[in-house]
Image 1 (cartoon, rainbow, N blue to C red):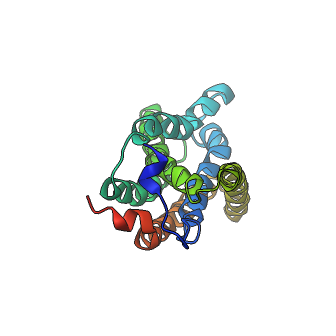
Image 2: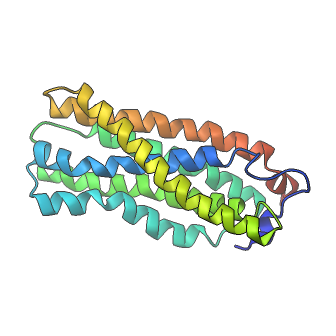
Length: 214
């Protein structure tokens, strides 16, 4: 995938098209990782080390999926991936919330891993295309470098914001760890679902993708 696929039209940039919205939502969904080890320990009796590795399934799904997703070109395919990413992330977190149980059996814990991997895959499908679009939003190399730096900043702040929101949701569960787990996963799923709307908006107003109808 090259920056030429996203060459902007003069007078309008991708940032103006609303690209930060879906990026913020996607990165914010990763915040679930901060609390999954706790849920694994309290609800499934997992050892600390095992619970930590299990929670990394989201990042693993993100990392592996974006390797293949980054090679996709063409306006129509990119538009679909931008929308599919938040949908898959939200669906994965929703299903994970539905799978939470007190004294979770090991067979159900085994189901958690592919579900979380699929959730992370949603990030990997969309994030590379959003990142490339942001970096190619200007023909000025200096502005391009600033945009690249901005991506890292947006990602870090979004994860921090998502973690803060998740912390509030954990507290809403009170003494019930099961309620806390469901509040976090359902709440983040709802937040990520909003990313579908922002992705649709970005697709409609992105001049480069609008010009490429395959």
